[in-house]
Image (cartoon, rainbow, N blue to C red; front, side, top):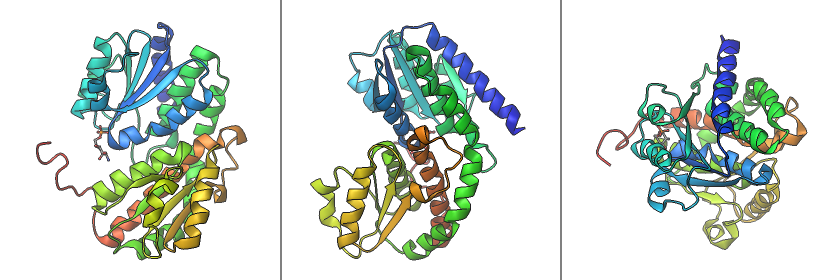
Length: 329
Ligand SMILES: N[C@@H]1[C@@H](O)[C@H](O)[C@@H](COP(=O)(O)O)O[C@@H]1O
């Protein structure tokens, strides 16, 4: 079944790339909201590191429409994502992109959704505990992005990334066993906290961002803010004391130095520090050359385990909302 689904994912990517091939793509816009936006941050990092000619931009959906970037046009690829496929501003963004002549490719879990219908091509990804990592959102996004880089610029990492993503689930399973005790301890220690900050840089910043806005604020009603490790010393570090909890992510990309610097300062003056360091995880299945790109996916998966444990300890299900999907906004 898994193999069948993975073959299906590859064929969807092929279809999407065939559409890309019909155009002369000069720029890529990543457009989504919330968690769906956060999962695009590593891809924006990939574009910055790998793309020699294609420009790339990342916008929250409504900002994309209202800002109306002057470069958006027939040479643009707009990559959208919405899990439900119903977030109105993301659906509008797809319409808007196409009205400008751009190619709109969306990722969603819902093939019958308005977003799927308003896009030139949609890619259905899998979701949930049973899904193989290869077919899930982060992986599908990478397959598309590396596929575009390969097609437009002859970037040679596409096949390697695809092979590494095929081994991702076994990496996840191994790492999760290693982090289970730490996740449990985190939940024990933080169940009564009123505020928890998150921090990261580079390819991992989106993971810190989504944990802050989606897990802590949206799903646990705990105050939070995602601090960019490079910005830490330009304001946020003044909040550090022995009482304030921070989650600090350390990835394997070129910006790791920023995260290490933030951590070493935090260790000096803070105490409630939870460190997730990808260097401590068994990523032996992953090629050295792409480890920096894969690290945020692994960190995100590990943090989901932290979220599950925290929700359980606090007796506050991750599905609980006050306003989202309930009132008008
Ligand atoms: N955590 C996310 C939110 O941040 C997002 O606003 C919402 C709608 O998103 P989507 O457009 O992916 O369906 O879903 C999730 O709950």
